[in-house]
Image (cartoon, rainbow, N blue to C red; front, side, top):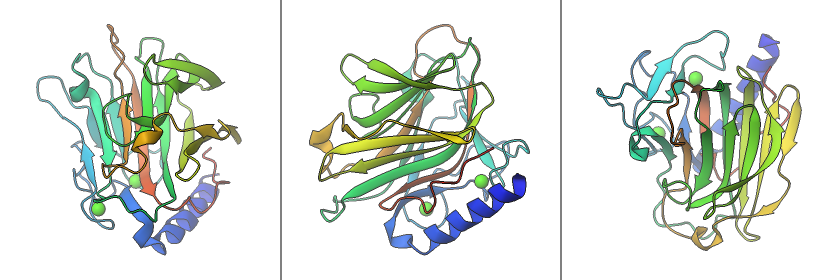
Length: 254
Ligand SMILES: [Ca+2]
Ligand SMILES: [Ca+2]
């Protein structure tokens, strides 16, 4: 199984290397120092892509580079941990491309990454979204929430309402692809886990007026739910935002 996954990841890496001009954000954390926060400006193509996060000495690290065999996508990954901090900005992690101004020839955006959910019943919800800014949730084009074994799709940003689209088990690994089609102002999210795919199908973008804005197209993750939560983390690797789809949707983590 491990060999199959490594081959699949190698294929995907080669594919993406040939399409450098379409990359907007890329981080694999392999050059980062274990036990520290990741490089805020991930080395390599593309230039000027950025990770926004706050590793506060008061509230403890939110992001930490780790090397964990059982996740083992490739080399290092990052662990994003929930904290008791009530200020959203201290808890938010935002993967931000550099693109200014907006390229009018762009018709599609894709965000994709590997993740492993380490969430228990005492963990806050993990919210993930792609949008034109990093302020959850109003700017999101599409978003997901993971909470108590349920996978929820954000359906209304103002009222923060969700639709249940699937389930997960704590410790499960997945590969997520969020795709945005600009001309039709639609999106689709695919979650590959346990050898199957959960798809949202094609849906209208939640915040279509910002599709042509010249802001960052950010992939945002947040343990933003308020409450006395004490645990929870998300292992993440191979974070991509691109104008091109990943080379092989059949790559399913085991
Ligand atoms: Ca890695
Ligand atoms: Ca870079």
